[in-house]
View 1 (tube, protein in one colour):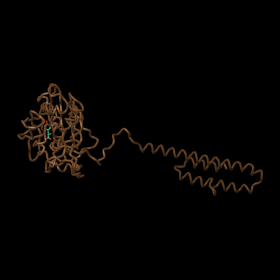
View 2 (cartoon, rainbow, N blue to C red; view 1 turned 90 degrees about the vertical axis):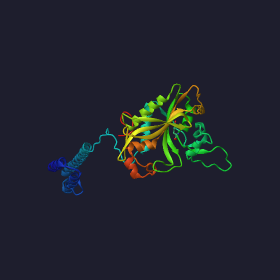
View 3 (cartoon, rainbow, N blue to C red; view 1 turned 30 degrees about the vertical axis):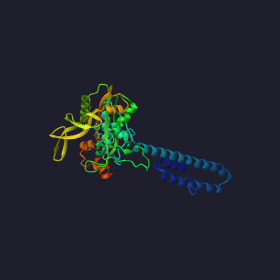
View 4 (cartoon, protein in one colour; view 1 turned 120 degrees about the vertical axis):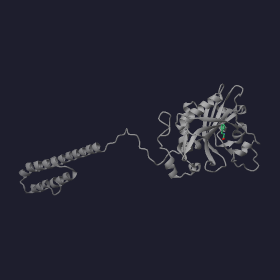
Length: 357
Ligand code: DAH
């Protein structure tokens, strides 16, 4: 019995894995194992011998069994330690950007310009895309007969027959948000209003839905000089160039007096557009000093307050900055186009980290 004990405890101590351990268990204390065979010999013994041998065999069996389970637990611990040592994970690593979705250039440009105007003290206001025609036209000094109404190729919402209320339109520009913001906030006020607008128009640089950002700054001492500085700061930051030259061209809008269209100096080299150099000019926005009638329509006293406004085409900016030749592709939802021109989802543009890296 001492030999059996030494043999099996030795084997158990040396066992390298669970399979080896199981083989030892079968050989030692299994139904046909060596200890069971010894138990069968008890029948041939004298009662005296049996009294000694019986408990001793049981004790041996217990001892082997507990050595087996102790070794089994030790092997499991070692296996777990090994897994923990090899399967580790650095939870402080940043998440991996998955290229399943990407940010549309219009969203990217909107984020960028919002970051820039936020630095200049402008907050963001929004208005409805289905707009009362008073906000879209009349309040902006575009009365019923005004040719601008026809020029804007307006989409009118259907009204039931006999419903003679003034029509709703798909807003043709973001300018109505000027009125809504003045009504809501009063003066002084400094807001930008980005969003979708609609006009019945379709070619390489026009789509029936596109995006504008309106700017509005009203206070007691705002002049055209402030407008010029703000637009220059904006263009420099947006196109990420230090030197830009803007040209203010006298123009006409019903809602501003005086009015100016703004061109940016640029060059076209082999179809490649460069901002800030060259002999060409590209129109990028309309602007002016807000017409007193418009300030009054917003519920603010035009004898006390004045200010500037501007309207920029966001899609246009994105085309210029990112070299995208055809506006219509912006809204085709073609995944190949989106993968090519889209931006990584985790890069939020800001002035310190860089707008468009
Ligand atoms: N609303 C004009 C348009 O859609 C753009 C515009 C011009 C907006 C002059 C303004 C402005 O705020 O002052 O064409």
